[in-house]
Length: 143
Image (cartoon, rainbow, N blue to C red; front, side, top):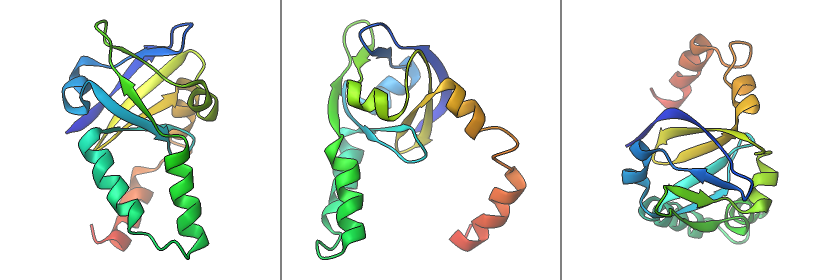
């Protein structure tokens, strides 16, 4: 399971170190794509295949479904971890997520997310995220 929060720095070539604790679960080759909330999503090959199957099942006749599929698939790239534990994030994805130097990598179960550190701090602040509000809203999801 992909869990935890890690901070790393992008090098001048746009490479990032994959934390060793996440490397085993994500694999040496994995997929990175545009994510929601202004971050990037990273999927193991197995989880990506599961996600792709869900995308394929969406109705082609529904514009929202087409937009959703385009959003995730158009920016997706396969990444490979090198011997130093680094991988390259494509410039278009770095630009989308506004990744410049300091990056926070978080594990969220079946995927990882890559956040610009300042954006993550703002998103994760008590002004934006309230544990009580989240808990109240979980009842709508049956939790």
